[in-house]
Picture 1 (cartoon, rainbow, N blue to C red):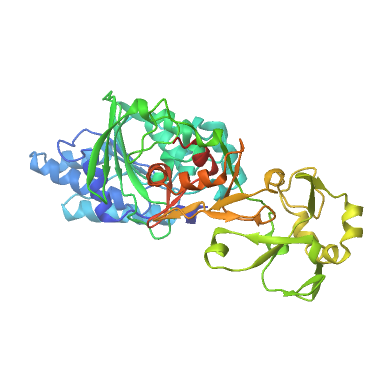
Picture 2 (cartoon, helix red, strand yellow):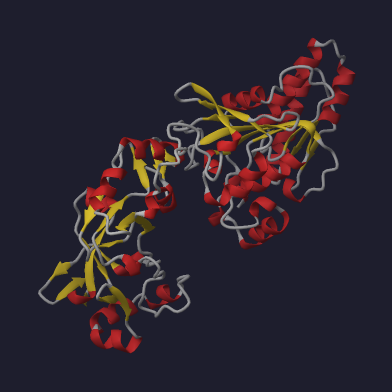
Length: 468
């Protein structure tokens, strides 16, 4: 997990962080901490600014050394980076004729430290680690010690933001370079509730990628415990647009511009249609058939034959875009549009060849995190299946430049993306018209999570919550 933390902050963004926090002058006597300091990319600039400002204010070298030992703090969990950080800071101090500084830099986990000091500034770039990449021990620790991590699939940096706010003094400022997904992730809601009161500014890099390794874009979050603002100043760096956002408008996901859902006369998409995530086999390698040979009664693949009646046409936004024909094993059937599930003996008797093929993956199928009552041959999740046997629409969870909506016959099975079905007998043509509208695209630009470049990630809930 530690290796995943080591993404160091580019110098230009370090300066932007410090400028945002106003860590610029009269720095003597003001305590600052960088709580995941790595090699000291941020601390190096902090120390340079501290020394230069002290010299400008006619503070002598002896007092500057005392100040460095009293005012500058850092933590780093990795021993190698910790040692390199000390070496880097010593080099900067020695350049100004300051030697043998007893730095308050700790080779510890900031989240497990019991710091008694409070700080005027917390400035940093917390570790970007998703819930999926956290080991079970870390997940448990975070759930037990941090309110922002109590529920759901939280990110590691949530705990850093919460802990950093806690260690600020009554007028302290936090300037953090964070993944912008924090503002829109479903499981970030508790964190957003915690930070909204003290947040004064957001500098959003939107489509500008700061870190090659990171999948999401970044933003600078500035919190100030000494200010009580009704609005947040928002800066879109790419488009050089600044505007104020009323805090009272930031309910649920934080939408920063382009679309507003304020009209009482608007109708919610989810009242008329249902948007849901497509099927989840939890092991597509077994069920999804791509390189096959079709016969009259069987589908031949990799030396096995599969009863044609056990398959359906499979589709994804990608396969539809590239006009690829794929099939999927469908171990269910419908009776008057009601999903019927086979018993094991019934399935194996009706589809002996398909059973033989699936049993070649029996170990992998057994190791899935499947629903409790599912049979060995069924998909890992069954919640999407009940409503599939009808005319539907399909769109990708990733939107790039435009919304592409595909029309699907009732017997097609979507294995990726978000599918749409009608709820109140309203024609799906109306749903397609809504989803392809400029208004919906503007909504996506506001609520979507930056995925890569100009691409945005949306959820089924985003679609259901859209008002038109």
